[in-house]
Image (tube, rainbow, N blue to C red; front, top):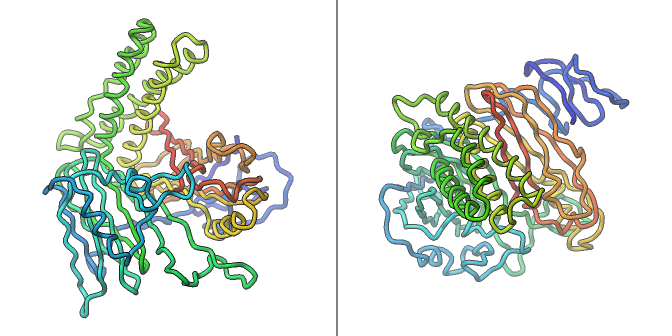
Length: 469
């Protein structure tokens, strides 16, 4: 385990053997030292930076030129025709989708944006307003609703880039918000701009980008404003996930698998059920309300996280000892993991934590080039994992890493161990860069890079897992 302590954003720090270290930290290392003061250099693999996060909401004083309005409270029957019509004339290329076809993802492991965004739900009314004269440009949009949340699909068929202000009226809930951006598809014969300017290298088409935005805790229906940027021919998706519904779904699924386990091993099922009951989870109490303070909801969440972690440990032990059959034990283990993930994501939204993972642009471009030349050559890709505290509470014992178990065989991660931060105060961002090296990196799908973040507040650990697209 690599660990160090930074007690204040303006504290002096040292760069030692690939790690940014606070003064007073003891680490066994024998490398050259570069002195840093104040905010870390942007090229440093590990950073703790102050006030690095800006809320991703357009300012009312400087409205963006195009506004897209969606009302999630007025729902219409589901229809895929609206989505197909958005791409019908070919002005905007549909991103690859196994479900909607005409395209398929580049690799089997890559996700399907239609399924990711739950676009099979009920249609929502959408209104596009241009605030400039003449109008800033044409925007195509559609939106869908399912009980787990809302998705907004945007496309720019025009010749100019557009910056949009997306206003969505959401019901009450604890919403995780994500933005998935697809760059414009090249027209026949078009010359693409290279990611890395080098006359010896061919042009590279950038990959889709998935970003986490600051979530929202709504005690009643309210309008949530987020920005979106669309290149000419570009497509963007905004997904709003109600974490309370996610927790409720995982809770029901866990109990269904416990009933199945009880038919083969009643004692094991009773033991795990008793542990979960100690968490005393009441899903409705996770919603905000006049008598429900955030601290009480967080306390309930982390009490349930402790109970779930204990149940996971017992279940893993039962599976290792073959005390329960795999046919019922493995599905239950999966549902317990989904419950823990849903609880942790809910905790992150309530705390104002924003986790992110990104393939750094210069290495993403080289990865595409290497794949074209030789998919199995040894290449290095840099992956940045970060956690921003946009809330009002300090979180402690933060570990930021990459899950090595999600990587294909032959690919190594440096550093292998997670990076440890003692605390993350409001307004700070903790970042760490990991190097992926080995044959096959060039052909490795981006979503095989899985960020692994843990933190502790008030007394229980929470675990966040996030993937590149």
